[in-house]
Length: 147
Image (cartoon, rainbow, N blue to C red; front, side, top):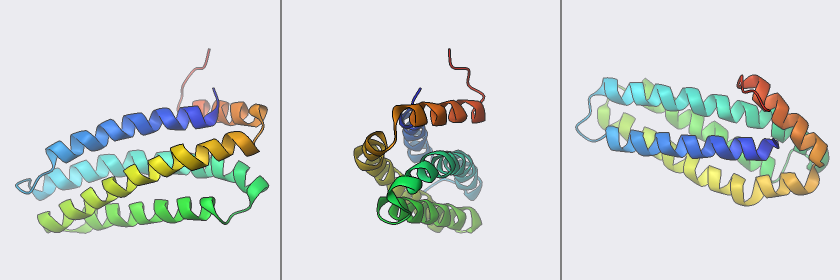
């Protein structure tokens, strides 16, 4: 499996989680519900972003440099993290819910950029063997057996 395909699959799962969180967390939620939803989203997104940065961005950086689309993607990862930290740290339900929803909105837009630009670029600048090798690294890190 090529790494962009694995990451794309994770995007699908994360989008389903985001939909569920948006249905669950509302203006009349208590702070515990918001914090719990935030913790789940944060755990999964941080893990996903770490794999992107360690496996895909590192390989691409060797070819295209650290600027441009990679710096934009890293900045968006940091902003999503900041919004989730803000939601998790707030005791105000409205403020926490707003920060969580902003993080989800930014993550969706971020995924769209990765899918339309970054993953396409990765397939153009990285050879197939490299993408497959990184996909195998992804599988090991996720404890997935590729057959």
